Length: 401
Image 1 (cartoon, helix red, strand yellow):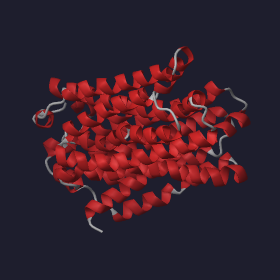
Image 2 (cartoon, rainbow, N blue to C red):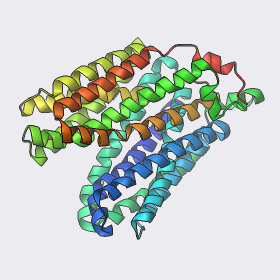
Image 3 (tube, rainbow, N blue to C red):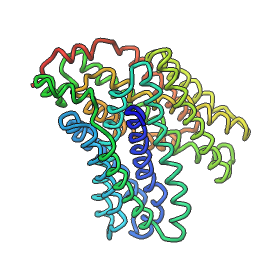
Image 4 (tube, rainbow, N blue to C red):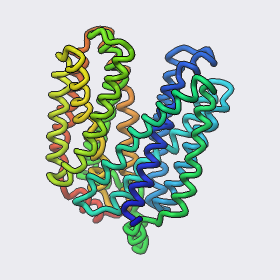
């Protein structure tokens, strides 16, 4: 297997395990709330604390990966979220659950950007979109894997046993460390002492142009996560209420939408390689705005299932392009720092979207929610238009103190 394929396999596996780890909480939440006798808000804080850990982990491990190497730090992030996940199964109170999920979040937040940086540095520019899409689909594999494991383990062995499965990534980390060489582009940058010392968080704001680029990309990443969370967390219950769908029917909707998302991500990667990032994001953002708005008028089982797949295709298809998009704006010295920091900021801020959607549903209806989501995609489209080439070159000419 050549180096390019190895980077994709390692990054896909890492994101799959990360996605599985994050979804374990969703499937086990009811049992955790019952065992520790806590309310829903206290239980919901588990995810919030995990997101905070992911943000800090993204920044810390992004900086470390730029300084000490992608592969070495990548394996440490995998080990950390494996340990945090396994320890969650040993928690004796909710405070311990918070601590262990924060640890798991630290590792999970660091893994994404490092894997994307590895892929960006291994693949030629005209194939980075599809390579990034292959990696991004890993998160959906993780959701499916978590669902299958939860269905088997939760009814028979309980929620603690589910988290013990999280120790398995330790084996994966060992295999990666043994079989994957360091990024040639990163190694080349290390030979230049002046360039090697520029890998710091301040590089994301080294000039006015790179500052605007960083802020714009954070807004786009926030919209991506806010849209996804708003759709996947609330739409099943909205459809049950507005269309009278049963729980089993809404589960079928979730599967249909997830399939649309996977196809959308794979299609987006190839579209991005062929037509360029700006055109690809522009089309998908506008299509997402139209799709979610029109979806509020869907009636009947076929329309709801097909519409869900179309919404998933466009709205989450774009997820595949963020690794390549961010990586192309920053030089190798801060690429991992940029990818991790920008996307995890988006993940932390966008994670509040379900709360806002819940507030809208209490006061209004599904149509207003879909207008809110459509407006988000329009905002992201406008911000995307401000992105300009040249930020990477500007950064390379600036010494980061």
